Amino acid sequence: MLRSFLAVLFALAAGAQGDLVFDKPVQEYHVTPEDKAVEARFTFKNTGPETINIKRVQSSCGCTTARPSKNTFAPGETGQIDVKFTFGSRRGPSQKAIFVQSDDKREWKATLQVWIHEPLTISPILVYWKVGEEPQPRSVKLTAAEGEQVHVKSVKASSSRFSASVQTVKDGDSYTVTVKPSDTTAKDSADITVETDYPPASPKSYRFFARIK
Image (cartoon, rainbow, N blue to C red; front, side, top):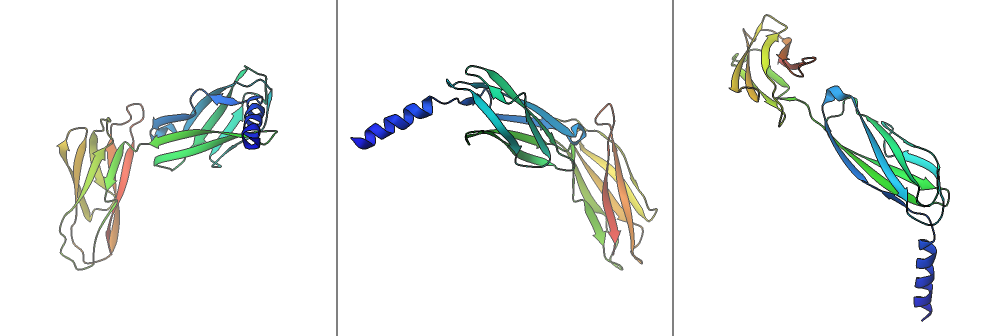
């Protein structure tokens, strides 16, 4: 009997507090490295009968900033958390948690999910030969990200001891670059530069590496 009474009492006490409810607590973005950063807005509403005072807003990573539109929200009032994730050299999936803490030590969480798609994937990033080895050609695969159309315009080796040529597997989608040293009598290295037409406003070049070691 006492337990039931206490449970009801605690439930009533919790219901008497303010509560932040996010319209969309999890947001997902798909970007490319050229975007450099993602800016998101998490809107919410104080659905409880009491005012909420935000004491602190923190993110799970120093690369992500999060700021509330203000700190005090009356019952029924809406607000937002402005979030900016600067991803730098990061690639692939990233997830950032945003924690909102009130002055009475309650906490709410929002999540930012970002997929950073490299328009063109190169595999492998390094081809090599040992000194004295037969100078057989090596193949490197270039693959455009799903949904992207990336056309390879040219490939060029930084050293005259290496030749590089490109073959189209599927136009705008996949290519093979063949690299071959003229000989392997001595150590040498070269950067292989891949020129593309993407993105249209500022076409990007890529590099991979060839070594005789």
